Image (cartoon, rainbow, N blue to C red; front, side, top):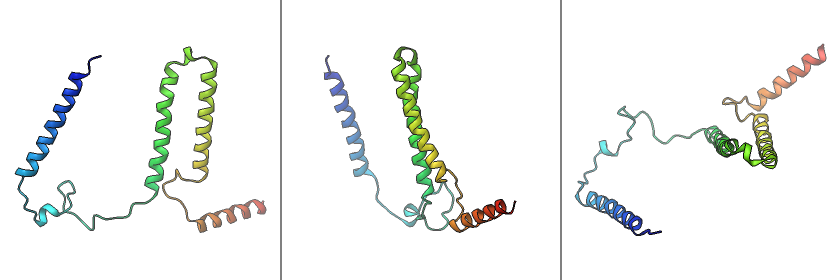
Length: 137
């Protein structure tokens, strides 16, 4: 195959990007002022510090979503070609789904899917109360 035109196009595209960035750097005025240096919040007046601590649950939920989203990407090609793949591919995907189900059960057991987790003291009190209710019966 002749890749010359493709390489020429890539070089030309890179050149256009480089020239645009270079011209912007050379021609743009540099006059910083407090308004330009302030945090932009969709046209709203900034309230408080822009540096806040995020709850780590955001990251846990995002990682769990990412894992199960990638699982769906693996399931689509398998589902499309299921008839032609045979029994071995079916068993292989069943093992894959079982492993992911065990992972989901683990995350669920750790209560990482709940946004508001009770404190360990609250959990202990609830367990004591439920065990006392059971022994009273």
